[in-house]
Amino acid sequence: EDKVVQSPLSLVVHEGDTVTLNCSYEVTNFRSLLWYKQEKKAPTFLFMLTSSGIEKKSGRLSSILDKKELSSILNITATQTGDSAIYLCAVHYISSGSARQLTFGSGTQLTVLP
Amino acid sequence: GAVVSQHPSRVICKSGTSVKIECRSLDFQATTMFWYRQFPKQSLMLMATSNEGSKATYEQGVEKDKFLINHASLTLSTLTVTSAHPEDSSFYICSARVGEGPNYGYTFGSGTRLTVV
Image 1: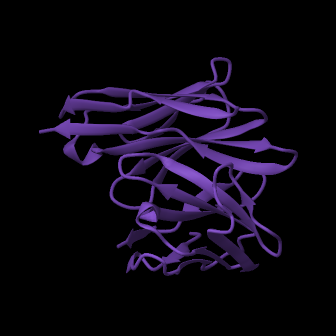
Image 2 (image 1 turned 90 degrees about the vertical axis):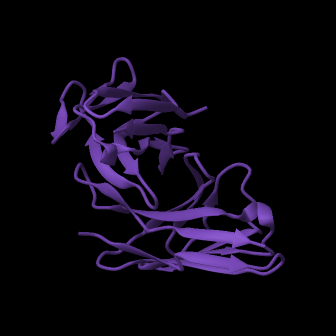
């Protein structure tokens, strides 16, 4: 069965700490892996990763995909209270012939304390 | 950028009634829309994939007669929760794929908080 697993499920840190969130997947016909940040409503897009080993960076956030290990990490450096959110990993893949799927992991609830 | 407008953002309904949620792609054509459901502190669970002009594909365990999906045009998909019950209370979000080839992404509606009393 295709699946996406995130760890840890929750994380509490203090401002200034660096965190690493993990996402692993087992899917057929992988296409891409996406990271989202969800605060109160709909998820907001962070990164899309398709190639292994190429780091994507946006400010204090960065992410990289390892296709050999079927995993990705999301790093946040110098965390701020505004980084508190659920971070969702989603994998886009082709299943059942040509059906395109976007399956989400369980999410990591990050809490950054002042 | 591509925007999906979802309405209503919040709805409270009585048990046994039906509720319709709309998602419109405002500046692009969405041949495929995805409908998700999210319980508190949990991830988004795919309910169904709707394709314009054809029947939706439902995920295992999702009752298609209860969650009616219609994708009659390239810019509108609707989810109707029929005979709603308190356990249907949840956050429902739609999403559409934007772009083709290597440069694609997904855009989400703002979500609908459904409370069934």
